[in-house]
Image (cartoon, rainbow, N blue to C red; front, side):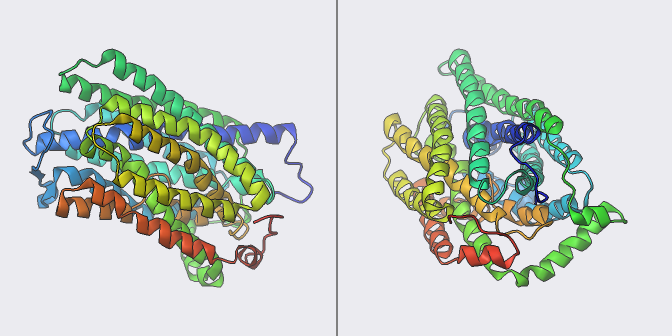
Length: 458
């Protein structure tokens, strides 16, 4: 937390906040261009080639056999997403514990961000039937992405007081959607100018280089927060005399044992993990649903995601403003109700018609940024002082495309039914259960229980 008397509105603090916002700008290229648009259809197509289906096949029923396990080509990507999250269960809380013990957080942010960017750029080598290489690089990139966001999120409590965090968090998300949208717009221009009708291999190559562009964007713009952010070592970092890595593991063990002292924080975290699992599954698999089930062209998918991005920029700011009037928790609950409408509408979307899909994307854009930004700021109120990294490590397990139950359920239902529509409608359960749990969390009591001062409105 900021020291008493600290002027968080001073010019250096404004510059630091701007630097913090720019990491959202940097890494949203991975969320948007890679996770949301290109990687699902790209890796699925490469997997279908490996399964023996000719390029351009509409209904591939082939199978691949990674490590001797038989997997439907259409299920490989959702399974890889799910596996990446199972691995983050071990990596991200440890990363958070290390961040809280380290005297300097920025090298951790740099290491994770540049590793993820490098793995994304290395997708240039995923050619032919190298689906296994694409899956491996995605695992590295997605885990590194989550690790970097853990460190990034841990700066938030030092940059804003309790009554400002909703606004600051919403601005970060908004700028992220704007940055991700601008790169995606450039990629849309590339797809439109360079694609040739009937040349599926050329389309696949363009998608590959669009993925690579996200890695370059991520690496370049990460330099801004690394320059403008200041170090805010926690109290535990100042007293740590041992190895930061081993101290991090010890501190993680202590935190796991002490979590029972904050049951209401755990209750909120459980609610978030469930409803955000649904949100992240929609983000990660929307392009695959649009291309494989609705037979939409890649250009249509990109235009739709652009609509989502730019409306999410305004939506994050609008819902952030609404939270100042009715409170963050009520605003998140309202957004979850709107998510239910979106999921049910997606089930009934007609195939081959771009306009309904784009209208649905507009609905997603309005609620997407606000539901995520306000969840992040709300959780920051529930973290004991000095443990921001550790707690955001648990939080990040199900954030920004690293969900696992949703993709697993989606993949299993497709493997059993060959229906993407049934897969998408199954996600209703995540929004219903998560919303109900959130409604029962006594937020104000949860904030005071960890020793923090509640904001005026919740």
